[in-house]
Image 1 (cartoon, rainbow, N blue to C red):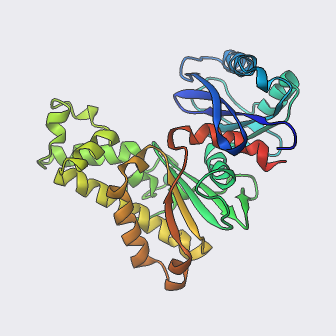
Image 2 (image 1 turned 45 degrees about the vertical axis):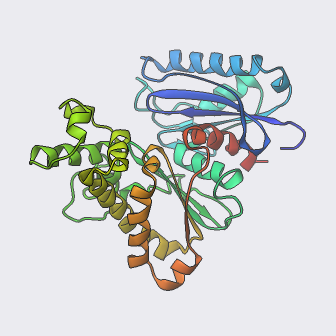
Length: 322
Ligand SMILES: [Zn+2]
């Protein structure tokens, strides 16, 4: 990081914007957050973003004059080289915003903006579970499936910075519709709401599970966290749902492993907290469907900084460019 020791990471999520000051090694020394959904205009959003970043810098005397840049991860598409954010679905009127230029002018420091999944992969490569790997697949499991590819020691971004959309690998030609417009994508089986939809459908069809009592019969209150809790308590149905989910994930990832021959698969995001309930069937499926030679090189690991991986990932974009 040359002689400047701090980097600022901004994780713009669908519901929350997290801003953190990050030290060498990926340690967050200070952070704050605000709700994304509150903003009706892009102008108000950018104003608040600048205020929050400024506040984090101001609150840390050590950061003043010691900041080597700002990294931003966004849940959408971005022109990585120009720092133009094409869209932010939750902010009204957001279209082709030159966010890099705006922030660089204001803070007079380098700014790097990328898709949040690429930022996640970059953070894992610089400071996390992916450290030292030459080729890897990084996956975040949440409302969607974020994918970041590490190829030959660096983040692979593709021809117009759109690579890594592994959630949209088709795993069932007759599968359900996906948000991307296609059908049977891995995300349509493994994304948060799709898992919960499957749970609710099966309960309505008569499956017995302790989940029903856990939410007092209000099925729409079922969350992946509760599903894990029920699985830990031995609820057969919940264990089965996770098994199915891990299997779907394994089917999609094994295709990618056969293509890329990576040495690691790094799994993060909220859903990864299901732990063995999803990792065991995932690994089993990889063994079933991956070619022997590929399997020898491969390790499946959990990501570091689970809840803060967005901030550290965004911050690492600055380090990547040093
Ligand atoms: Zn899709």
